[in-house]
Length: 424
Image (cartoon, rainbow, N blue to C red; front, side):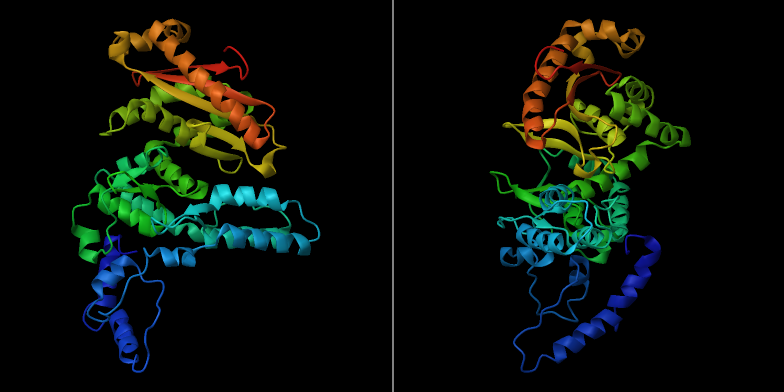
């Protein structure tokens, strides 16, 4: 990739002077005698910007809604493929409806033109999934095909830019997304390597890289970008985990704490880690998010496990948004783990008139009894009950566990279980 400094010279040799790509496109241009047009795929906006002298009469149709479904599969196409496989595979451990639901959660969501109505399925991931159904008769254990591993490098490039980590984290806030005036359409290698990288520049690159997608426009005609699906979301979470979990001890301890949460719904050990290790990391960074989002990001990055769960932040439900839901994958219902829903609130130091040092000295029960904290716990509990019923109905859940979580001053976390049909 040209983002790596040592590769820039190789890229320039391809394009400048009589480089290979310019020579190729000059040959294409010279061979068009008697031809109306030629259609070329696989040319990035970066290459387009730098090779115009080799092929300067091209038309970029990337954002044309007419061609929106050119780079992915529609749901009708996926459904047809699953139905055909269902009739041909003899010893299968899957159903068409469940397979479609799983693929929709993990692979769907791409929209390349703002006005396009239908979202598309990632073709590389879809073929990987369908091949596993055909050859193994079951769903793949890992939903991410390693052929998509190159996307990790793209996110790493963005995350290491000034304010790039901020953008990666902001993208995980699925309710608001990333709002920019308009998508950049072309990038020269000099821009990518040397120019100042503002949010529109970085967000546009992530869009063209396929790890953000268009989800609409504001009433001011700004472009709204969001993470398209759960596989792409896992890449963002993985990137933040690598940047925030910096020690061997932290990474080695996390699986056991995560297992405790998944099997018992007990957040005690995880909360202790967040208070002593995670909050100090987050509070030392120059973020411009709401503090409630910082609390949610701590849990999201620590609990994310797409081997077991369809884990979705800001799931739209009952005219609102669930903060964080962990629903076992359809093919993982037999594992000893719980379905979980977490709702988050935040109380500032100013609201409770305590210092950080005073907060750190108070036991959990005393914090929970503070009037402002208790009110926020109750509010989070009410939201959890409201969304929990709808979520249980949508996924056919019989034992969804609800948890109300309140961050206090980015120093402490107070939590309590919530009864789905009554009081906490």
